[in-house]
Image (cartoon, rainbow, N blue to C red):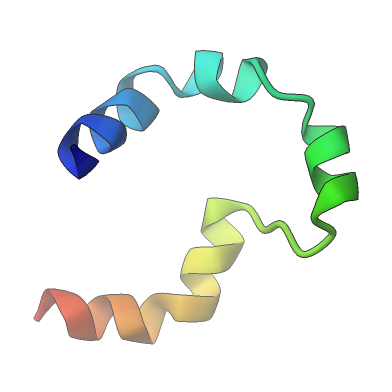
Length: 51
């Protein structure tokens, strides 16, 4: 199932994010990061996991 979730996020990201009120999500979770920010923070772990 994780593969299908990745496919959904990759192919339908506009609908996925469009169906959510990101201001409310950020209000509920002030630590929410963009994927780019998260990846920048965790790049060493991601790189290590792919080698």
